[in-house]
Image (cartoon, rainbow, N blue to C red; front, side, top):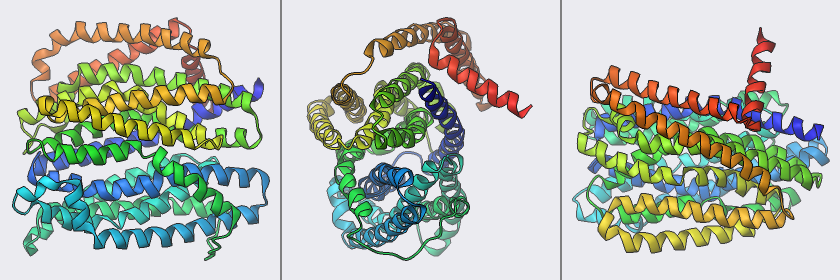
Length: 531
């Protein structure tokens, strides 16, 4: 029991560190989106950029960051626990070499077929003069991003397994920094040479990918790792990683595949639809990154080690604690994003080329995306558990179910709801995915304490209702300032979020919610240790 308590503290402590780093990254990401909103609004140029970036982003999840990270951490953790240091580092070098070669070939192939890919992804762009050609140009520029971001994922896996979480999580901040500084600089320079400003933002994305990899290399060096140019395609560790990656490629990329499908549908809607969906999805990614991704990153090495030692009882406890904590963090965020969607969008994006009509369209989209927030974040916890157990076929089944369900929902609703049908369908598919995965995981772990988890969920729901009532009470008093100048808007939104979060935490503390008490105790100990 003491070991499990230590595991819980490790996950909470690591997740807290990751959350701080992710918060920096997501805030810089919002700055990046603000730059896009101010310079390009929602329309021709940004629609093209979003579709162009979808392609390397989809490939990243299919072959790189998502699937590779989960598979590599599982194998690398087993090597780290059971093999010699030399064998472990040799595996890392072999993976680096193989992935670099494989993704370089995929990138070159994708560049060659860029025009065909764009026409498949957004066929209706060809109806607008120059839009398909611009999208193809941006795609070619951004495709090498796939190589750097995937190698970055391998480095992150090594550092996380070695207990280093902050720098890998902070690395994506450098991606956003490179995108903003490099992209904006080039966006002002390139038009002088006859290139559209949006091309500068595409080069900024590439710069950001290089920075995300580069900033982690000093930390990797300090672990004692030294790269050696090894390529052994018969190595058991590499083969196991690839074997796990094949189903993980589909299992972890359900959302990306659905986004691919959604982009195709969105491109057939009114101009600006792709942009509204992207701005809203970027915002909902903030709590997903802070809670779901942070907990997943912190939990995966722990789960992998427990699985390697066949400690199923400890795995069950880790899963229950992690899921309960993700519910506690995402359910209030869901309510907050729905109730405050319009003030938040207005504050962040409504300036320059981004109009009031864009604010309303994006706010409606955000509300529908928020419905599936808790399921989306919980899936980030559930899927790695299947890889740790080497039960990778179940996420694959869930993915195919989600994709089919997504197509059916959109097909029947897009005519009436246009782009909103896509946001609603995304949430519904995430809920379906979550329901399937948790039922199957419960069976594969021979049951775990659902009663304990449900007890926590009831307390979370009580606190969330309290938060909702507080927001509904406060909103009428702040109506004028929420429509005032940017400074008053910012103060009002911060006040609403801060007050609601404090009230929610207070209710959980009064209800003796165990994970909340653990979080507070962990921060108290860290704070007292520094003073």
